[in-house]
Length: 278
Length: 292
Image 1 (cartoon, chains in turn orange, brown):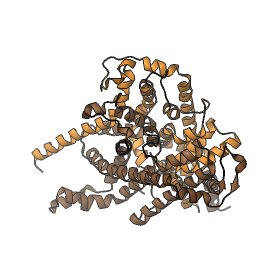
Image 2 (cartoon, one colour):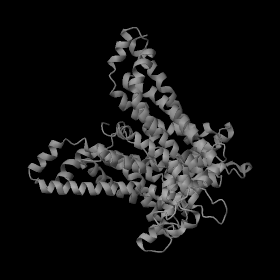
Image 3 (cartoon, chains in turn purple, yellow):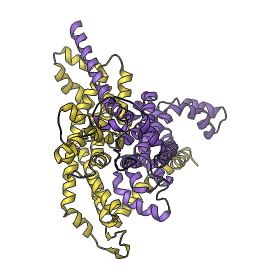
Image 4 (cartoon, rainbow over the protein chains, first blue to last red):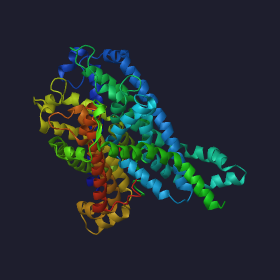
């Protein structure tokens, strides 16, 4: 390849990359712009606001429904993440370190859950949760989120655990540590980056869910942000809700943008773990 | 106890909580859904509960609403997955080739992956809105995209593709690492064009990654709910099968009929997975990609 075609190719790649970045960030820029427009300018159709104000954010945070939803989202997603990663870590440890009959069963179960359509069980869960008192509660959402993220967490952790130098565990046991001590003192610190990647992926899933939140909650007690935001109306019926929707959207998107910016490498590694090696 | 027996016992102890959770929250409810689907059971008229056999399935499979929803869901699935595959390959190649700014590129692409689906759909709804939006102004059109079936589908597919192409691209990018660079260089030396090299060398070697990505995206697209709910709410004949199931179960509280819909959706998902497996020979036990 001549130097000229190579330069031309790199120019194309750079232009393409710029386009992809615009593609990925345009809707985010759009809701930020919309959220900054004063109510009177919402219909101006401009990409960038002519005047900027934080009124919409003040209004959104003053809304008790939204504040409660934020707390619910944070609480439910964090609990689900902690539980899912803990359960998955135990299972992944067994998958990587032990040979036992039934390993294939566990992997198949995980695969089945990964393909499972959540809509198929919202009816039974709705019915059961009302009977056992889990309807419209945090645990009522934490349980399905934890379960549906287990496959993701198990695969990610299994892939990460495979790369851990397990001889260190043996060395610790030779030095007199019990299996549990060796695990917590030696292996857990080594496994932390993988656990973290799994946690970020699980959190994103739980933060994102709409169907369970919509079906299994009804009040401020457990409604999460996606279920609240989809039904936003203006503070008065004459006001366009666009500004409030945009401001609330920016608020729930900000943590995700921070997470992906900080943990970009680990998220990609976690997402593609297992997809390649099989 | 032998070491092997101890290992087995420990392994089962460690796996038990995860297995129990998966059984409790998926297997048990789906069995319960099958049971419920055999009854006339409407929560608004609980006293009329009665065993009706397969009557609920007959009403679902005999209803126009259901078949319309199947067609709608297939439209969205086929359109979005094929567009994503093409666009995903383009993005993956770009990331593969980019010398500078790879990190920025990957971070930017993770934003659509990570963003809440409802939020993305709302952003597009506002963008395509005739009064608030910028799309009509940009394209010098006036018309309400979401008020007509054809254009509403276009917006739904567009929103789905925007959100999920990055995931596809990342999986495909990982697939590129399956291809040893020497092989494509060798093909080029032997006189193959770039296009030939891609289709004859790169693509076949990437096949496992492509099949896994396709399988999971197809199943995901078939379950489409959030985007349709936010953009049209199922109006203009755009309801997906998940929307129909949700309406019957939660909106109308008809657990019997709704469960029949749910069980049929479940059967469809099993069918799609089996079909993809039969067509492409997915190494199921090894498949390791996942949903958004």
